[in-house]
Image (cartoon, rainbow, N blue to C red; front, side, top):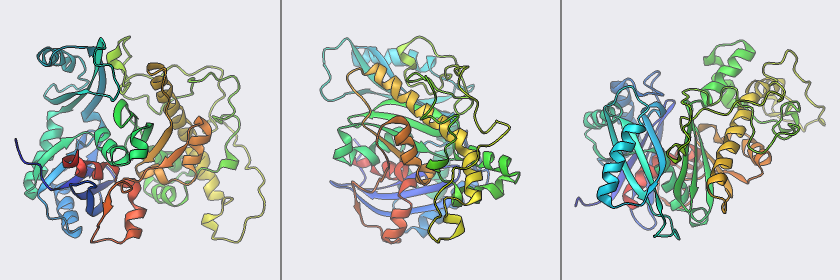
Length: 436
């Protein structure tokens, strides 16, 4: 058996940023260096790595600038359209029987046109579960061969040894839950808000219970702002970063998730947030993750979104604010315009989170989600945590992957580490691969 490395660099190749985290194994583990760099334009998209040479060059410079010298690397699979993670409930069987059964399940669950794949599975052993139960849970990951080969090629270009290639939900579990005992023993929904996609992963006692990917993210917010303000997306992106905020006192009441009259629990208006790709769900326990399931038809009596309405509601009168920079004032007209542009998408996000939690409840009648944790680039939008908590009725916080580890970062000060914690959950979780 190969010896576990003492130090691993976790690598998260995002479509907007490339993130790295060097982690020394131990109890507790220690993060010794981190780094973030913009992804080269068009080099990574929802299908994975497009320009391997550009990504390798950026990653090489980032590792050097971050003072990371270890050659043991753990890569997170890039591109939500190139990997599938599902939790399957199957009859209890022997390892040999399970191996044969999973060959059938893998063929049944491939959503890719290209059938050249890499796959892995593992039995989920939940604490307190009945060892004599008729069924058992298995986590299955299937990735396109090209996506795996791209990561191996990048590692070869940089002289790295790909110690592990893993999926994001398991990395997030390590950095946000397994290193934090207060969260490890709860049922937690982690919402990872990326540029190209948003994942909603629900964990029970630190173990993945429900993975789901929505094929939309922060880029859609940018497009909504660009369309409303009639500007280019390159102009809209910095406005989103600087001014996007949930204005709690200006939520359009006609379509507010807090005020839809007579809306049943779990019934949502979801016109497009998770509509592509869609495959009709089968009445089977094997479709439980819902990653590629079509949303329910929207209720016809739900009022239309203000994003498509001919007239916009006027902002509610607010007391005269204290003197401040105009861009930071809650009554800044630019903030109001940006909020009204992105609000329908935020409303849909809330609906999809609620839908996922309702599904978890339906499958775990004696359990409930106790906390929602936000991570990723969109997690620190002002008031987003409050907006989600108020709409769904579950406490919501921004996740901190550094909370359960020692911080011994050499190249950056504590301010840099704290300011970028929301971006680092996957990279730190990959770096923790040798610790669990």
